[in-house]
Image (cartoon, rainbow, N blue to C red; front, side, top):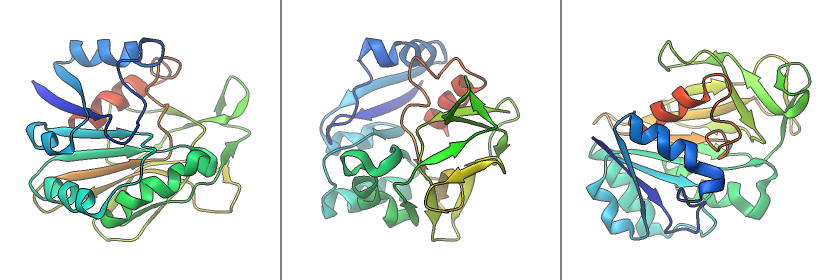
Length: 214
């Protein structure tokens, strides 16, 4: 069984919130994935995957060092933000992600053509990389963009040609640092792709479960 530590150490959205994440909890359980909320970073080493979903408390240097060490030991770590740098979320994510060569821009992405329910902030895309064949299309709500700064970082999700960053940035939305050990650090421009509203749309369910088990 894959063990996932869902961090609540940095005031993240809690996965036990039934209204937002009951489907993710159910689908994970059905897939043999155990998700537990963890408030002590020193316990992260007991898990295969560590998730930071909208962390609001900045990371301390020793925490970044510790998480980097976990990735070097083969763990998977994911951090997921939001658009507009609300609550300074991009800044907080950058406190960790920049160690792995990924920068959150804190911008806004719209797509007037490829979107869900005629809402240009609910962008859809089939421009996917390094993902299983069963993931063909995803919907990402209220996302920002990423910049990569290390050769070990590869793209996972890119907006369609019709997607536009309000800051004029490249519309790279999810990316992944791959360590020589096999460990991974995943960054995503939105944290609500796997909530109850989004997870049943297109291949968001398969995408969500893949991120928990990479």
